[in-house]
Figure 1: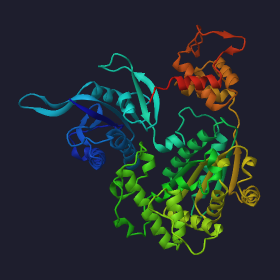
Figure 2 (figure 1 turned 30 degrees about the vertical axis):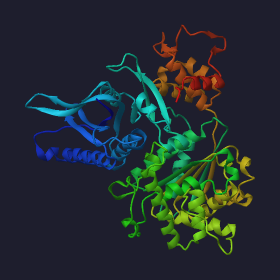
Figure 3 (figure 1 turned 90 degrees about the vertical axis):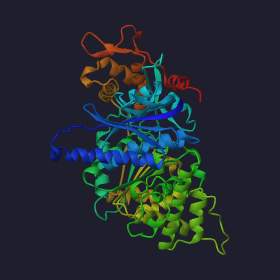
Figure 4 (figure 1 turned 180 degrees about the vertical axis):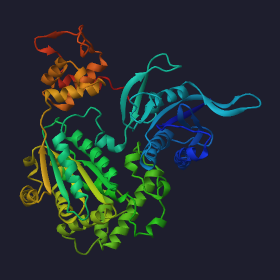
Length: 552
């Protein structure tokens, strides 16, 4: 018996193989591409492919970590989980194939299975069966893992899903989706997102205009009160923009950042993540020398992968060290090309990118702050010049420091094919850190030139709440009783986050059932009064969520 991390992978494709080789040739090529993608990733991270099955039910691949030759310290967070993320993203991005992945960890039998004349090496056990079950779950988030995986990856954040019944387990098994570093600091796509159609049209139209050849940069502000759904709107907008660019075959470079409360006092705080993102992107086409330098273990098939999109662990490992080395190499190369002083490179490397080896050297004369701002803007513009379109998505910009605003202003005024999306409370709240002249130029000069647009998000109406309920209950809006929409609207005041929490809690606690008019309505056993169904207030909902967290 060995402790094995088992990965079941199901590419969501139709398999129609026939005896006619010409008709099946395209299918064989697709299966070969899947095989090469999965085995390439497993080989890079020292995992093993156990099986590749093609039958009338589809395609299933089984990978493992933990067998002889593939056991490592911190195996789950540093190798096994990143492998799941890489496989899922590579199949989607390179082959256009969605996939369902189930992964578990547990003691299993490892050995020969079969008869004397025909046998093969296999792994057998309850955790293997569970991995297959997770792979086949409906409403799959992409990657699902069990409690054992979660407990072996302490520094990883997970989203909980409803427990599932599985063979070999007495009780329903808790299951989770591992979150990437960016999902943790930014947020993920909300499947129950509704409304905001006019605002979505505006931002998608602005993105399309900015992507046209040599168009000047544009800026889009999303304003609203706390809890109104600014972050969800921006995340959903990025999804829609991606779809639009994919249809038009526009290459998009995306970097995202959420400003924290203390960032106002930290110089250039915005560019800690921004520079990390853009410098880890693919090399310039005209930089032949850089391609010959050592690359990260995650530079699959000759191009850089954005580690922060793929990484699930925050541990310092050889993978992350290799990624940081590549970032510094590219920063130094760009600095040489555009004549950036060594002192500025040291500021970016040491203070922003956290490179401890980039020590600050003594200089005879300190650079003027305006020069540093311009050099940093030049680094950004040069580092993103290979992309047809650049999107910066910045949330809570009311916390951004004044020097970050100055760099952002230079980038906005000098860049082309750039869209900057900013989420914030009312604009007057950050007037102390943003240059007043720049703010005035945005609202007047650039607004008139259609380079600046702002929208103010309002609360959802009853119809939109009903649509959200339909998505939560997986039915049509007309199948939701009007009383549900009314009660949830009154209790949530149309705040999307609060309404979503209420509906999710009602579904989980089975407070909704089919009623006499054949619609989904309140369970008759649930108490109501003249004010409608009584829900917990927001504070109580948050406490319930905290109570449901398992101990780390």
